[in-house]
Image (cartoon, chains in turn cyan, purple):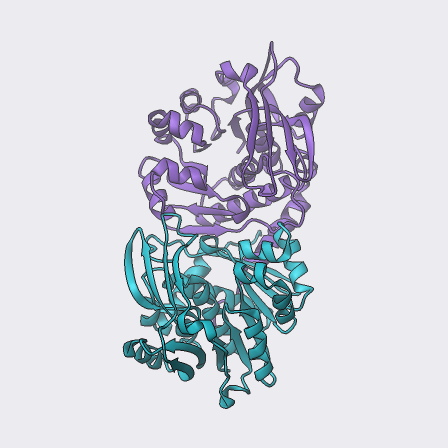
Amino acid sequence: MSILVVGSVALDSVKTPFGKVDNALGGSATYFSIAASYFTKIRLVAVVGDDFPDNHIRLLESHKIDLSGLKKVQGKTFRWKGQYTYDLNQAETLDTQLNVFATFRPDIPVEYRDAKCVFLGNIDPELQLDVLKQVKNPRLVACDTMNFWISGKRPQLKKTLKHVDILLINEAEVRQLAEETNLVKAARRIMSWGPTALVIKRGEYGALFFGKNHIFSAPAYPLEDIADPTGAGDSFAGGFMGYLARAGSTSAVNLRRAIIFGSVMASFNVEDFSLNRLAKLDWPKITRRFQQFKKLTHFETLE
Amino acid sequence: MSILVVGSVALDSVKTPFGKVDNALGGSATYFSIAASYFTKIRLVAVVGDDFPDNHIRLLESHKIDLSGLKKVQGKTFRWKGQYTYDLNQAETLDTQLNVFATFRPDIPVEYRDAKCVFLGNIDPELQLDVLKQVKNPRLVACDTMNFWISGKRPQLKKTLKHVDILLINEAEVRQLAEETNLVKAARRIMSWGPTALVIKRGEYGALFFGKNHIFSAPAYPLEDIADPTGAGDSFAGGFMGYLARAGSTSAVNLRRAIIFGSVMASFNVEDFSLNRLAKLDWPKITRRFQQFKKLTHFETLE
């Protein structure tokens, strides 16, 4: 199955203790698309300004990403500027310029409307719902969100969640959304609103998956050199959804593998700035790290 | 193999959002001993005051813990008072009264000096080294420490670590001790000082094990009701060392299982205040939760 993804394509300026980039390729839909492109065909719906560099378009095309839903309009591309200190878990936003993204209304191309697999990047929940209204009969809908929408558009977000199968969300945000500190209780509450599964992203601590009848815990890969955590959550989502779309099933076995593939893609992403590492992978590198996750977590049962 | 443990036995007053206890049984060596007692024979070296209740002695005895090294001296037992808010990862100390613990000099009974397996609870590193000088030829030495000793007695701690096989330590403390933010690099640095293995305790995020040739990651058990995190780290150490002593080997297979047993005992401990839950376990309950950890972390490799 191919995946329809809607989200942001941006130009990021990022500084970490390990280096910096200016106006580098970024955005939730970008990280998602490149990560997922190793698993399946991606159809991207987003908007950029007329300043968006051609070489970024060529990079996306080289990953066979279908760009008929990527609109180029007059104005400047969405820009984000942020920095991280040695605690790489928390970005400090220095500047956000929405630019052409401020008036973004996702218009799903007719040939995309039979999409079976949809990922709604972190955008206004009303726009997320609007996307779903345009898609005929999706088999799997996943979405991301953030504190900004949870505090500002809670009713709209809850309305969108009724139509979402899997919510991917940060640990602090799951607590905020559920208004509950305990993660098990928080997950159960959110799942009573619609989603049948929940993926809690915990940065350097990995991910926690809540399904109907099982919980699965995956660590982050212990890396010696982390350059830039920007896009880790979206890369995770790309690996996760990419594997599920490729497998064509959301069995418990596949969901667990998908969490690991999400962790694999996130672990590659943070090794370099922007899409520098993520864009240069291949299937053997990806499966090799998947096996390393097995080594990292495996233990023998008792005799 | 039996385990010789040296550490504190205390009376704790603890308040969490889920209840409180006053002058309840606590202390690092207590949590360790009860947790480890399900795996092997424990010999406890500690000190209490003449106010120490008999029923606590009987509880320890009921777990077949050898108390010939538990000195009762004139004065009051070590008392700790603390509280936790909804963020159960961080205790706030309200009051510490060292009392008889202030002049504690571990005197290892002659019949304990052939101990093959030693756990040095979180006490002054000079006292930890003093214990090791009294033990003839131990096969396995593990120890815990804390920020107080890292900042106040760094040279002495490093001297002690030369004689330690496995250091168990909190995440923030490993960074402080190694003076390095990255955990992989921090682990390597500390292991260059003596220990052949390092267990990083991460509270609700589980534990990370660094051995000579492998890294192992274990989650914490996702619990719906956490009453009181006091003693989780010591319960972890008890399950970890208990299993290694029982298995009589530190093979990679056993080290990984030991980390899981540590996580099992920590997960039980936090379900109730003081030793209330930990003291009422049995082997079937423990192995059942061990299997639940397998379910929590297992994923199928690729075909």
